[in-house]
Image (cartoon, rainbow, N blue to C red; front, side, top):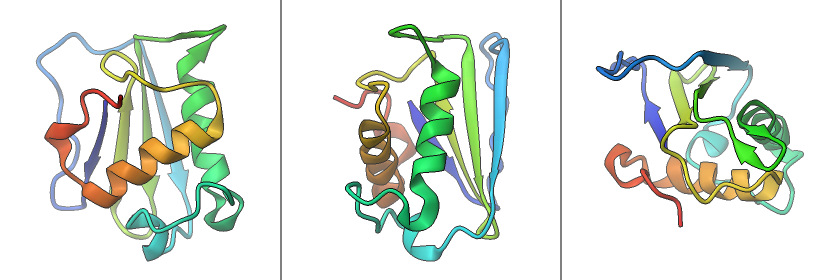
Length: 120
């Protein structure tokens, strides 16, 4: 699933075996609107959401399958927000940027870490 942490609660280690791949993406100059999920999924160039979504899909997909041993970390700077995308638990993600943007938007808008195990 996707999980968000703010500066006060840095992502913690899980008791599960760590995945083999971690990708850390530092996203500079992220606006507060983007961090709130206030962006148009039909215009991903605004706020450079397209780059964040491309990092998610490129890091997680191989052929048409999700790499289950991979985690993507998007650090939204300077806001101190970290978005974790875990290949082992995410579902409903397709290889296109728009689907990734919709999932990212919903997660940023709600910011409820427990409800995003499945995105269906």
